Length: 292
Image: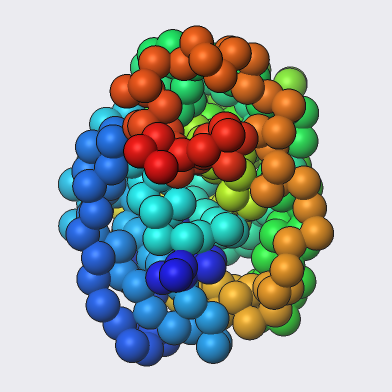
């Protein structure tokens, strides 16, 4: 029996999910280690929800240190079939102003030190990732933003950088010539792993400030940024409530069968230890589960 159907990953500024009832904390171990924090499981707008603070409560974990595999695998263990990920970002376009949200439909990878796949150790899978976001979930998030009174754009590209340092001005200006919309440090790996786990995934990117390309960037104070973070978190909580309430009960997308033609390795060639480790994800594609 699934403990939750919708997963919420909270980014900078959103460390808890207000409005949850029947709340309980769930501590999980995964084959890939511990997630960022305990999952907070409860009911929101009549739906089973699992909330995870991406960087841990107190913001203890840097983007490069995040155990992305454990975070997504933990969602899978809880029965989550859709993830709405909240992320603080910098704007690379004048049109995306602080306090506005962007729901991207594309990602661009500038990371260097991340593990972005559950596969390896004797099993190879190549998922389709040309459309990295579940547009069904993205459209719900966009409509929820509008209903909550938050200016948002559906579509755009999220450039995922390594960090933890921010961009140089040369990098920021280059990204603008590429047509990137927003820049952050976390969501690409989540999207890749969610697709491998056959979980629908979409990002709500909360614009905190303009990246360093902007002529007013250096005049922005820490107090101003914190104020925007707080207001963005308040808006995000309302958007999440609206999105959870409006999320269709059934999935009509292809995310739930992303691995159907992706596993290349012959079943008999997969090491038993690897097969057991990934049974939650690949089990339905094998004749029987390990130990059955």
